[in-house]
Length: 112
Ligand code: FES
Image (cartoon, rainbow, N blue to C red; front, side, top):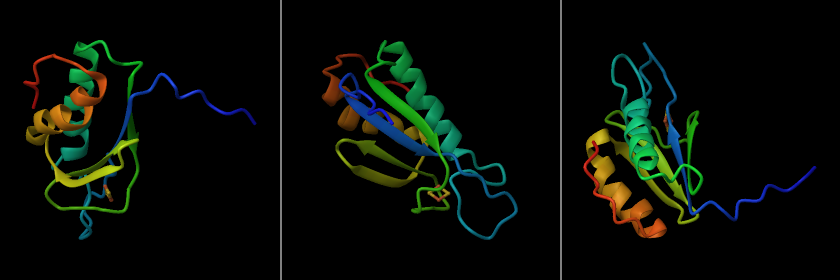
């Protein structure tokens, strides 16, 4: 076993893209509602455009346990800030609050 050096990572974002098509249970992606994937793509596009792929880690996950019908669940570490019911339209504000501030980015947040 070897420890992983995470010293280069300023922010790690976990985005649930769990899918439950045809289920009565809420899910971050289901039956044409693709919030998890859309949120992931919006964050990924901004991180890539800012050249922050090595400093801001973005990971798709299975169910994080805070499922919501209206959007995705995600969490920002090391801050430990959790959100549920997130849509791509929420991403600019989340980026501003939890990523841009942490990395000192002055890049415009216009994704969504
Ligand atoms: S399905 Fe996304 S948090 Fe449960």
